[in-house]
Length: 369
View: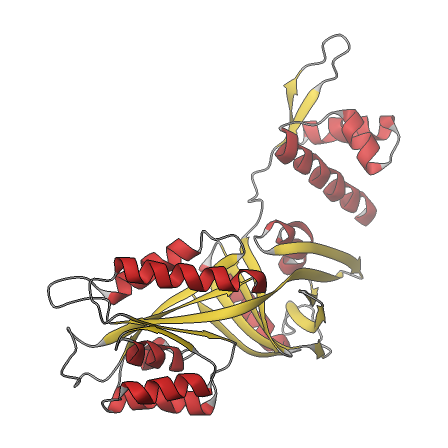
């Protein structure tokens, strides 16, 4: 019975792909692509017609073969995006679902499984995970065991491969859905004794954090709004994938502030070859859209915030920091600065990345790391 189900899945997937690519398929299309006898292909088309998974788009007319189309009530994929950013041996895995419940399920079971993951967090429908290149065995199965986990991360040139082991719903997602997610290059899977193991290959992207401050005036504008507009703008660049937008509260006692003294940072993952183009577009956009001449940008690559940089973040929340201090700090940590005095707060936003929202929004809170 299991082989019949596997054939059904494979042939239906093939029919769906032809439907997506061409709007239809014929029996001959399935016969040739699957390498099966024509009679077998016709039997499967007829069977799936009866099950309501396939419909007749055009009846056979003369020498013109009948055309069919695959349909399904199931979503083509609950996985919107799967992509990875790399910093040496460290890898950030991003998995955005169509549902917060799906993201919560995967986050819970990935944490339970452990494996190569060192950190798992969720922001709505986006699952953010930290890992290192290597392998670490996991057990999956029915409760109380986890249903899915990542037991290996492999880098091959400019690609990353995740090695996943799963059962039940996650196995269906791996074999039937993940290949359709944005950012995925290739998925392969194999089943043994109800356990499915698979590989998901994605690009080894560069993570870029962009801090922005002082784009508004007392008369109008808001840095958070400009940062969001910037994120939408650069997300249209081929090879750039948006990750997040965050608001960071800085020292509320700074006398030059326009209101509460907040800055923003955005995160994107980018193909290394697109980095130069990204930086230029960021500079041009902020310069054109800012209402203040004091606008500032800080741009940093990498996944983890060094302790010395984090200390600068503490400074901008507790005292008045000179521009020379910001410039020296940026040079020490290889961060690019552009613009006016806004670079002080922009660098502060970058220095406070990867902290919980309740810490980012309350300058009195200890960073708690």
